[in-house]
Amino acid sequence: MSALVRYLPLLLLAAAWELAARLGLVSTLALPPLSDVVAAWVDMIRSGELIGNGASSLWRAGVGLLLAIAVGAALGIAMAWWRPVNALLGPLVEMFYPMPKSALIPVTVLWLGFGDGSKVLLIFLGCMLPVTIGAFNGARGSDQALVWSARSMGASRLRMLWDVVVPSALPEMLNGIRTALALSFILLVSSELIVAREGLGYLIGFLGANGTYDAMFAVVLTVAFVGFAADRAYQALVQRVLLWRE
Amino acid sequence: MQLRDSLAGGSQIVVECVNHLYRPPSGRPVLALEDVSLEVRPREFLALLGPSGCGKSTLLYLIGGFLPIETGKILLEGQPIAGPGPDRGIVFQHFALFPWKSVRANVLYGLERMGLPREERERRAQGFIDLVGLTGFEDSYPSQLSGGMKQRTAIARTLAIDPKILLMDEPFGALDAQTRHLMQSELLAIWRRSPKTVIFVTHDVQEAVYLADRVAVMSARPGRIKTIVDIRLDKSDPGIAKTKAYIDTVDAVWNLVRDEAIKAQEARA
Image 1 (cartoon, rainbow over the protein chains, first blue to last red):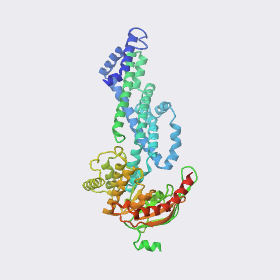
Image 2: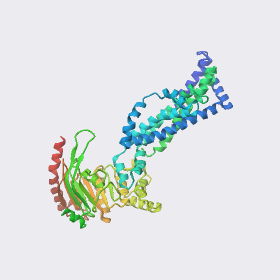
Image 3: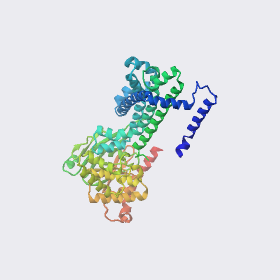
Image 4: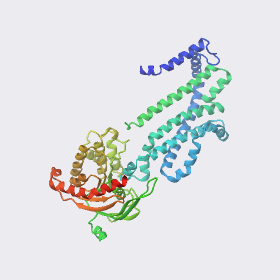
């Protein structure tokens, strides 16, 4: 019930969309009726078009994001804990962080071609720094007394890093990963729109160029929904991981 | 002379002519400890008493091996201290529990590092959880506990690894008055049952006199050991706080500390 109330604005928007198109308030070329879009979506699911391209996109985003999380977290914690690493990488991180990563699309294509490789590399590069910065700030904030407690109970330096610094960094790192998750979708779709032979972004561009706008809208909505669902699932996961915080 | 005493087994810890410069992230370095020498006997309860900023915690951290010793030396059973170790357990003012671990997992942490078999670990952890009166809270997280319960957990966690020396850094400073009194008498009871060397940092004169065999009074800025007072009181007397001997001792120690407290306050103003 509360979910219904919560998503009521969405239902209203859907109804307004359908009515506006059906009553001729907007051109159906600019905005096909929602019911047509849904029908096109069902067709594309049946034909396997959506699933095949969707799987390809999710694979690229997933691999790129996982690499970004693994490397980004390790970098952030290393920078927080070893001064030379920070001296070496800190300026680079500062320089590349504000850069719009979509500018790298042609570069990654130049390096790795039109396939999965260039998308994975782009997502990896684009999503790594928010994770790095989250892990860095979190690790920096590790409580000195916790570090000392672990050491005085016999933990080696490395063991302490894993047992104290990593969990201390976790809350901020998980925030960084949420940003990275959103970024991964942006980079995925924009890179597939520009240069790709499969994937949801490619499908949007292809259907748009063909003039099959109801199908194009169906893919756009799919991307929006997948992004939303991924964020929700991620937040639920974070809540479970951080259960110890009150 | 000092060295011979320690070799003869008279002292467990020997602090000799230690200076320590505190370097704040910004601003000028401050001499936190100047020419501090101190001997700690095996199984004695020694209080380091002084106003805030007198370097008493710094001295404790040096003995713990958490801070580098710059000048002078600190020997533990004849060996220079090189880093922290499980022979010196520490309890901090703000508990320093692992917030992502339950009470049980916190107490188990040191036992896991010792590599004890699982059953032995569980048994020992439970024993110390029971000892500090936290039976039934094994699965609680620190955020769900009161201040007193957090500090009990921290004490159980430190006692579980059976350190030879217990370093306590104003352990009851963050607790309310009632809890503090309760914890003080419980600590004494635990200590009497299995005496270990305790170095207890506090700025509370009554606490120092109530708990310690000897009270090292420290002066502020730079921190030095001003004098060491032997406390000759019958600690097994539950009504000790009302005896004349206790009140007189508190008074005498307070007189020693007062000048330093005033000086410390002026320095801060």
